[in-house]
Amino acid sequence: MAGARMRRVDEALREVVAAAASELSDPRLGFVTVTGVETSPDLRTAKVFVSVLGDETERDATLDALRSSHGVLQSRIAAETRMKRTPTLTFHYDDTIEKGVRISRLLDDGEVDDR
Image (tube, rainbow, N blue to C red; front, side, top):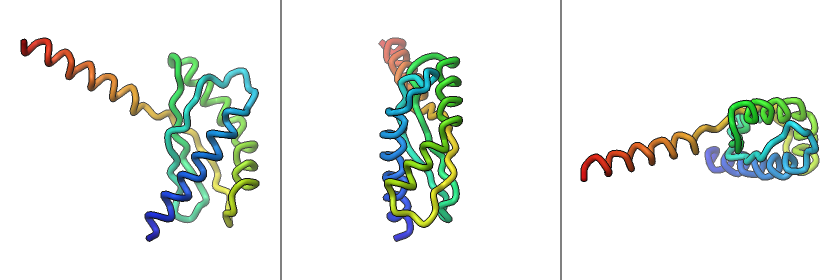
């Protein structure tokens, strides 16, 4: 059951971070989507995976903005969840969407070549 508990914790953190990130007023913050959270079993750290709309410079600026406001996000987690510890957040870019688009293009190109 530890796996189910961790999934619930991860989802709760994802929802809180996504809501709090949408309310931040940092001008570096672009259009960001929190795609997932992976919390360590001891609840001390949490990796927050985000997807950013835009090019690499916008992505880097958004990640910098999130990293600089991690204290605000952690305090929001502490206020909205009933956890023994508030995990230290680290932010990582989630390139799953880009990989999916690339695979889709490769498959489409493969279909065109077969005809």
